[in-house]
Image 1 (cartoon, rainbow, N blue to C red):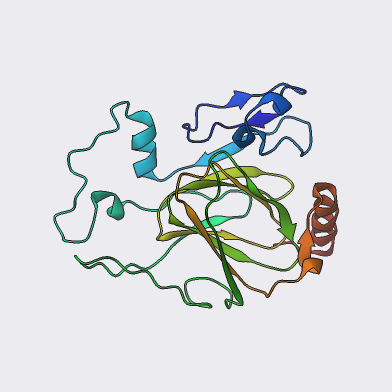
Image 2 (cartoon, rainbow, N blue to C red):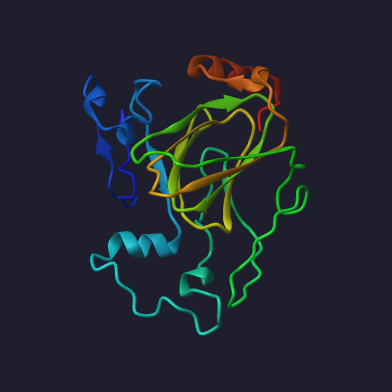
Length: 223
């Protein structure tokens, strides 16, 4: 089983031997219940995060932009590349010295109409959430405050996205297994969903999710 550390660079991957995962803290157990064969997990970070990870001092003297209401890191592009069929959406920002604003419109910034909004908060450090997939529902996941990791799995590829900007959203298509972990203190996970809640749309068993994914691929309806 291959499990990436929470905020390490792409070069750092921790290998957890079978039977040892149960001894790991919750953040390191995110993937332990899935298939046992070794699998690589991509860690996708923004350029600003990569500098933070590789810079041992972690201190920047130019954190403020010359324009009011902006940080230098605001000018960095979103994390590059896709993972397990998911991608980062760069949301619009209206900057103001009194505070910035981001708006999201269904069918515009995201490829679906918004039917439901929910958010996770007061998540204890080290806890994980999620652990399911949806048959038809699509969603956009945003770190409205703080930071956390999203591990996504399309049955073939697994990728971990580190979200820590309120103007970047992770677009997760249907039939994609996802888990959330490594929550920072005071973090808020905002989710925009394409459908109202219905329990029948959930795949809470990983093997059942794999069967549904394979059936969709065979029928040519997989995302």
